[in-house]
Image (tube, rainbow, N blue to C red; front, side, top):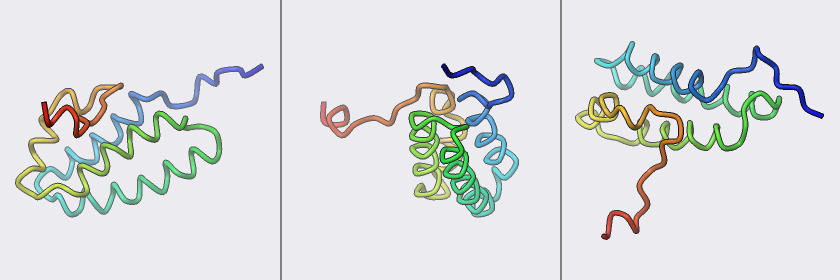
Length: 99
């Protein structure tokens, strides 16, 4: 039987940490990207230690991918997209884009 540890971070906390890093460096996207890459290592370690679930890591990585691969002029659009920062956000599929 698994007992939920109240000290473990929930999805909102992980997302909030990512958002905080981005917002603290909103005028310096490259610095934020450097920190995001560092966070990705932390997420990997946390998942291996059992403190981050696979679905939560997938959501974080999907956000990180967009933040790491966007052009600087798109950076603020992601930061300002409230849905992007909500728990349960999913990237639009290519099928959605074709409709």
